[in-house]
Each structure stands twice: as structure tokens, then as C-alpha cells.
Length: 531
Ligand code: HEM
Image 1 (cartoon, helix red, strand yellow):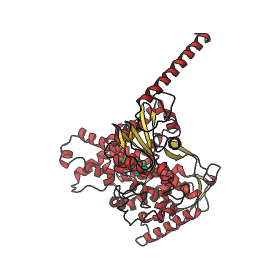
Image 2 (cartoon, rainbow, N blue to C red):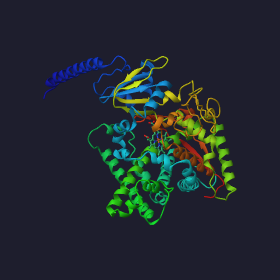
Image 3 (cartoon, helix red, strand yellow):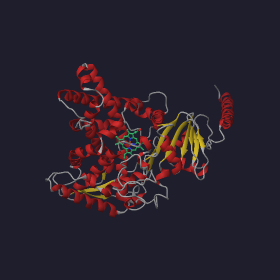
Image 4 (cartoon, rainbow, N blue to C red):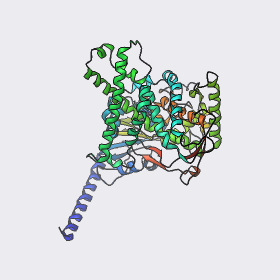
């Protein structure tokens, strides 16, 4: 074909495309109901606003709220996506989330391509139950020792016996350390010791990183095949340990759910009789099911926790140095208190109040960005002072957490990193109950919210589907910080990327989450503890 015949063809194709786009716009305009939210404009039919949503998942909705108000609907790959902003709408969203707004249907459409369908075999209730405060308290000392040993092993060759180390990138060992802790708490502890590094490597290999395009390409790319393989390796490894635990449970005569996560999952899913009468193939099938549930918790728990841990360090190192000093001195006091019970006793991390406040503040400023629900039929949104009632069209309904975390009527000076805010009004202390007059409050505690009924903390979701792993996440971050600061002094090595808080952040489209991409560079010096 010559260049002369290609040009008219291209012209014709562009004309046909433009005509289709105009017709589509006209068609969708006539479909819009009078009381539905305004629509974000777009040029490409069906694709709609997907590019803006993926490339700027936090900034774009904020900009559109500025133009279109507290509720607007966007189009993405043929679906409606309605964004809500402002406390009354978000309260309606939270209340509706248990009835007309379904979260599994929402996440299923978006998360399945990344996490696989295992997500929907998970029993979300068991996280809440099996990782409650009592169980977390019980596993705390062992978790502390486990991670302290792991930190010492990772850093032994990098930090000299005396003096400061060369520059170390903090992320390079925060990520595997948090994942080792996830393994330690969700798998039998010997499995975490033996296979924690293997699993960590496989999980890290699954990171999509820059290759987000793989999510929308309908065929299997090399990256997708590699992720499938990593997932299968993880499932096989976890299933192997789950089978071992099933066999152990069969040999023991237990009357109560065991304290370990795998034991609890097995005990609460199958009766002893079912286990006893099962064939070897059945038992392997059971073990595989447990592995699928754990795999999705690796996925749901590991990524947000590592990035919140990274932000916690970044904020502590780049803002007011007095905050890091206070955490260090609180840590020394907790370690000293623990030593009364023995030379190797673990500190009571759960009493690290100021550290918890710092984690909460970092999670506020760098939240998992959006809560997502699915409305199978149009969802009635009650009106409020300035906004009329609306009928939200069928499709996704989303709230970006920036809209809450940076609300200046709740967070005075919202752009300032200030963990002390949780020690003063309007935040009530840990021991006080939230007021009955205001059943939903923002961050009523410094620590992660204990009651899902009465809290409204932007970083962990809202309503019935608020994050069940939040207590566990705080424990892991606080345990890691405490074990690291017990053993090392730390100072920031400033670079152009991290000086004055000017660090590079990337938005992960799926959750609108802000991830830190620039390195946190530090020097470490051993403190007076045995290595
Ligand atoms: C700092 C770390 C974490 C953050 C910021 C975080 C945040 C969130 C958010 C925002 C949601 C959605 C809530 C909603 O849609 O209303 C969620 C759900 C969930 N999270 Fe987390 N999460 C963290 C750690 C964990 C951990 C450690 C686990 C478990 C090992 C976990 C398990 C889950 C599960 C199972 C859900 C789905 C709950 C449901 O749909 O009912 N998360 N999380």
C-alpha cells in the first residue's frame, strides 16, 4: 500500500471515530437523569476518564470535585464511577455500604486482575477474630525477638561494630522485614523462619511497578506469566505448611481454636470429624484452600503496611527531629521496663503511645486513597445543607480519603505533619468513649480504631468493611521501629530527593495510594546491645 492510499484511509478513520465520539456524547447526555450527579467530561467513548483516573488517582478526583461539586460521575471502561466528598455524603456512603453498596462486587471487578480470584475465597471475619488484641498481645514477645534477630542478621555486615555505617537504603530492608513479620504471624512460626525469605522474594517479584499496562492488556504478557508463577509458588509453599499444621491438629486433641492463625483457620472451617475422615487428597485440598486465604492476606496486608512503615520513617526523619527523639526515649523506657522481667524480655509495644500517633499521622497524610463499593441499582444519596438528594447511577461508588484526611475543619493545619494533634481536642483520649451525639467521629483515638461502629479514620476504610487488619498492621510497624531503634542510632543522609520533605511519591492507581519512590537514605550506628 502506498503513502497516498494510507492518508485518505487515516482521514476516513479519524472522521468516523470523531463522529462516533460525538454520537456517544449525545447518547450519554440524553441518558442522564435530572437528579443524577454531574458528569466529568471525556472524549473517548467507553474508555471515558480512565487515563486521568489511572495517571492521577488522587489529584484528578480532587480537581473534579473542585469543578463539579461534592458528587460527580466519571466513566471508566464502560462503567460509571461516582466520587463522593464531604462528611454528610461520606456518612451516607458508610451507612449504605452494608445494604445497597456492595464492596466485594466493587473490589472483585478491580482487584481480581491483580490479586487473582483467591481474594474471594477469603473469610475476612477471621482476620478480625484471629488477630484480635488478646492474640496479638500473646504473640508480641515472640514477634519482637523474631524481627530483632532478623534485623541483626540483615545489618550485621553493613554496620561496623563501632562508628557510623555507610549509607543504607531503609526501604531495602523495611519491605522484607515487614513481610517476614506477616509470615511469622500468619504461618506457623517455623515456616516463617524457614521460608520467609523465599516467600518475601516471590511477593516482591509480583509488584507491578511501572508495568500497570499489564492490567488492561487482555493477553498474558511475560510479566503476567511471571506473576502467575510467583503466585503458584507462594500457594504451594503455604499449602505445604498448612498441610503440616492440619496433620499436627489431628494428632492433638484441642477443644478451643488454637492461637496461631493457620490453626485457627483450620479449626474454624472443618470439624475434627471432617478432618479425621478426609482422604490424603481431601486434606491437600483443604490445605490449598487455607493457602489461598492466606495468600490474599499477604496481598491485602503486606503492601499497605510496608508503604505505611516507609512513610512513618520518612516523616520522622524529615520533619521535626524532636518527634524522633521522643520515640527513641519512649522506646528506651519501654525496653528498660521490660528488662525488669529478664535480660531478654520484649518491650510492651502496645504502650508506645506516641509512636502509634506518628503511625496514625503518616497514614492520614499518605492514605490508601479510595474506598470502593458497587451499586447494583441506582443508589439514593440523601441531600444535605448545600446539596440536593441525588440518585447515584449503577456502577462504582468511590470516596477518596484525601477528602477526609485533609479536611481543615477536622485537622487543623492539615498539611502539617503533627502527631501531637491526637493528644488534644477534637481527638479524645484512648480511654474515652466517642460521644453518642456524634456516632461517627474522625480518629477518635490515636491508635487504630477499636470500634468499627464509632470511628471514621480515613486510612482504614469505613463501615462494615473497614480494614480488619489494622491492629495487626500497627503492631508490625511499631514492633519493627522499636526493634530497630533499640539496636541502632539512626541519622538521615540528605539527598536532593529527600531534603526538606521534597521526596518523590508515586500514586498507585488501584487504591490511589501514595507510595514513596525515592530512597530513604540513612546511616546507622550500633547501640549497646548484644549482636
Ligand atoms: C497500614 C496498613 C493497612 C492499611 C492502610 C489498610 C487499609 C485498608 C483499607 C482502606 C481497606 C478498605 C476499607 C473499605 O473499603 O472501607 C482495607 C480492607 C481490608 N484490609 Fe487492610 N489495610 C492495612 C493492613 C492490613 C493488614 C495487615 C491486613 C491483614 C493481614 C488487612 C486486611 C484487609 C482486608 C481482609 C480487607 C477487606 C475488608 C472487607 O472488605 O471486609 N489490611 N484495608
